[in-house]
Amino acid sequence: MFEALGLSPADSTVYVAVVNHPKADIDQLVEATGLSQCQTRRALANLSGAGMVSRLPGRPIKFLAAPPDAAVGSRIAAIESDLWKAREAAQNLMEAHRAASRYILPDQSLEVLLGQDGVTQRVMQIQNNSRHQVRVFDKPPYAIPPGHNLESERRRLREGIRYRVIYTREAISWPGRLQSDVLQSVRQGELARVRPYLPVKMFLADERLAVISISSSKHVIDAAYIVHPSSLLDALITLFEDEWERGTPVCSNESEESHHDEARALLALLNSGLTDEGIARSLGWSARTTQRRIRALMEELGVNTRFQLGRSAQARGWL
Image (cartoon, rainbow, N blue to C red; front, side, top):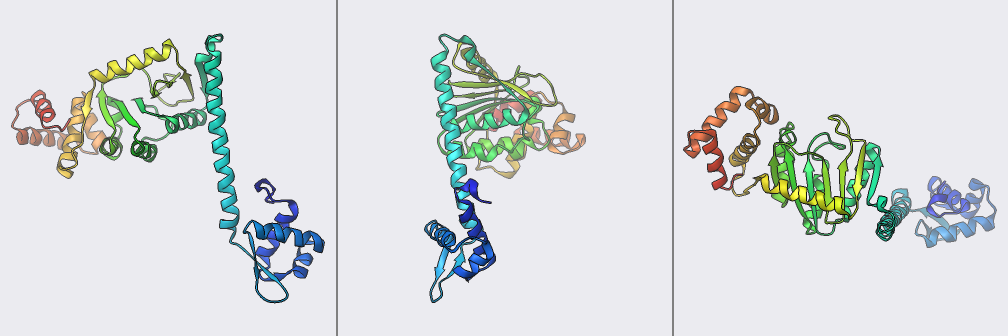
């Protein structure tokens, strides 16, 4: 049963028997397993050495199994950890192979990923292997629901990785996205800007790799290119920096929490060029409530036009 965890068939059989027959002695375990006494003793010695079975004091000697979630779970976790390390080592070796081959095989600069799961897993792996910074063009559609990457990004930010993300108008108008995802990421240290439109979904890791979507479908991401160091990667980095310069910053000042959180959400959506109806859908308001909140904000900041509202909000660091 547990041969995949490094146990012999006899060890596995005896461990299951000890779990099912707590405080059994050797003779009882021989009867329960159908193994010889020699095989049973050898298996018990192996299991004791692995911490999966313990001997109880007294005569005859009886045995008690360690809880399976600890005994078996720890072995599974160790194997999974080793497999993850092997997978990372293989990926790093593949990158070294591509780098060595690139001068004689130009096609090695481009890799194709197929399948939504494959794209998602590879992006997560590249994110986890980033060394200095991550740059993202964020626009629908999404391989994973918005917000599901929040904890991974927080962990990498704590590790000192710099994140710069440019969101499209559609991305931040996704219902609930701005407050539950974008502003939370900004508070953790993400640098975020908004652009009305971006030409492609893109994930840049350092100056080493870029992932860009192949399909322009509005419904699913099932194929992507991975671009390795090349003139194409240089062009994608330049494209990001150009769009970054044009973007409108999204800021979050933690000293002004609840009221100003709502104001910043409203201002960011306004500044992206979204209509009042689009803002209402994004924030879960009615169109009338949206217009009333905009008027109230203009009165609070002492301005008469929406243009002046944006300028005043920027001066206060709300955008």
